[in-house]
Length: 120
Ligand SMILES: [Zn+2]
Ligand SMILES: [Zn+2]
Image 1 (cartoon, protein in one colour):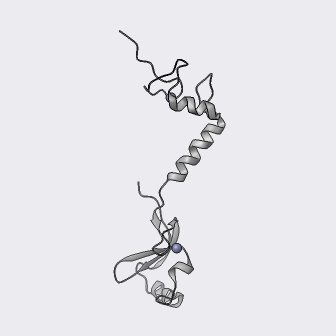
Image 2 (image 1 turned 45 degrees about the vertical axis):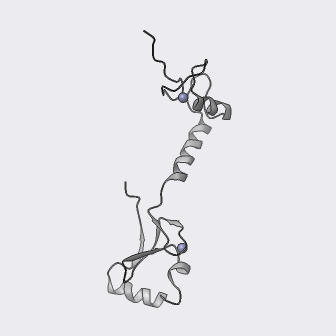
Image 3 (image 1 turned 120 degrees about the vertical axis):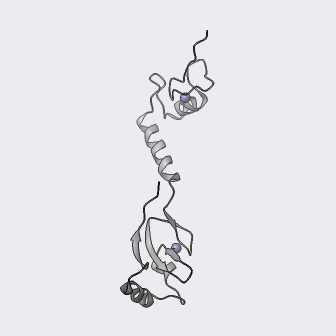
């Protein structure tokens, strides 16, 4: 019975090279993201993966006008529902002014500046 070996680095059961690492981890080692002896991520590697994770993290909303991903901005009630805007420039134009916004905001409802969270 042959023993199933896992990668020295990620502990995954990928196809392993002679040195005990999978292709992904070998790649990491080459870039200096993983230690060749211990198989652990180096400080640089940890930073790299953290950045990568953060950059793919989805924004909770997108600006209705410019489609930029946003964490905070204007939420403005329209006759169709609710629109989201990243900035004054996107939210206010000839059709909808800041004066109108302030009036709507004062009346309550779904028109205000807010922060959104990513829903899990
Ligand atoms: Zn691996
Ligand atoms: Zn915008």
